[in-house]
Amino acid sequence: MKVLKILLVLLFIIIPLTLFAKSQEKPKKAKTIAELVKMYDVSSCKECHADVYDEWQKSLHARSIFGPEHVGRTAATFRTTVEIGLKEMAESGVKKVEDVKIKHLAICTKCHLPQLEDAEESVAQEILKNIYNFAEKGDEKAAETLQQLNINCLVCHNRNAIVHKWVDGYPKKGVIYGSKDGEHADAVFKNTKKNPIMKESILCGQCHGLGPTFGTDNPSQCATLYGSYLWYYVAEGGTKTCQQCHIKDSKLGHNMQSYRSPELANMAVDMKVDAYAYLWRDVVTPTPAASVKVELTNKAGHVIPDG
Amino acid sequence: MPIPQQLGRGDKMGRGPYEKSGLIRETSLHPNKTKVEKFEIPLYIEEKKDGKLVRAPIAHDFTIDVQLWYLPYGKKDDPENSVMWKSYTKQISLEKGGK
Image 1 (tube, helix red, strand yellow):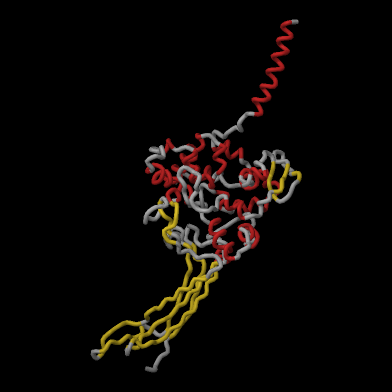
Image 2 (spheres, each protein chain N blue to C red):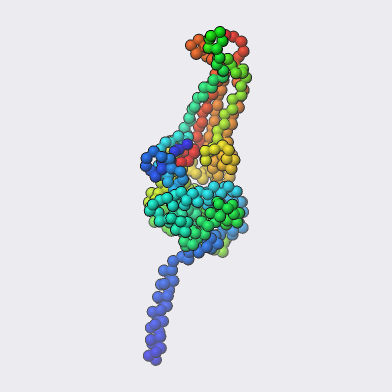
């Protein structure tokens, strides 16, 4: 009987402790690129949102750490960041590629692959191995691997969907943040929730940013568009949002484009030219000349080009 | 184009995003603003005739081509990155005769 009592007491202690430990478990982190890709797998989105998915696949968001198809300019810049940047910074702690950690890559991945924070250091090294193999040896398999890592549905509609987390809450597992509350026909993401900033420029401003990334140990500056949107466009009376021009007015939907797109180029700038020939007298010397006047009007909601 | 400042100090342009943290010079096109540039193009060759300076037209008919390019890496011969946004062509003429 005494033994039974002890066992019961132990059971009452062990079960709550186990449950508590389970509730305190940190989310599992990806150990490989394959695991990270699986963690952010959006193949099921395609089943119902085929058009949107196809649009997105044509965008640079779909190859955010590789860059333009076949060119891989972004991947090459990652390599330069290590070789010319990190290795030459006396206090970065990076003397060789193997020293590069997630915190170093975050200079780029804060925007180009924010979900790298959900991975272990081994993934940072695997990404670099593929980047170097592509940049230095033209390894096509490495290029394919890198193009599986991207800013996809789950980054904008879940992970990075909420900016003011104390007001709107932290992004929840299994929820797609979009335009309305409701049920969602998916085995994992079973609900939708209305995101108050889904159609606001601040959503894009998280990455298409303000300038130097203050608040980090070594600020960098890739994008300044949200800054120029606020201080030049809105300040001059502009009222459109990023989404209005890049998704709706362009008619490109989730194929969000910039300077490479004829549609966006046409929307961005008006060019007027006037030209004529004439003869003027330089004191007494008749001098043939042409006058060409070029007027450029920026119709975009930000400076062109970005700095 | 905007010239980013290396590490937010001094007079040097930053190379990559890892060292850009400011602007040395801002020459971009601003939203809702029009920039006007005028180009005066000489259309003559200079020579001496009877001891006098003469500026003779190189032709009477000309084609004016104006192209607006987006060159993110600064070079036109970079087909995967450089993009021509707008182009304009006009035939102009100098009148013949007169004095």
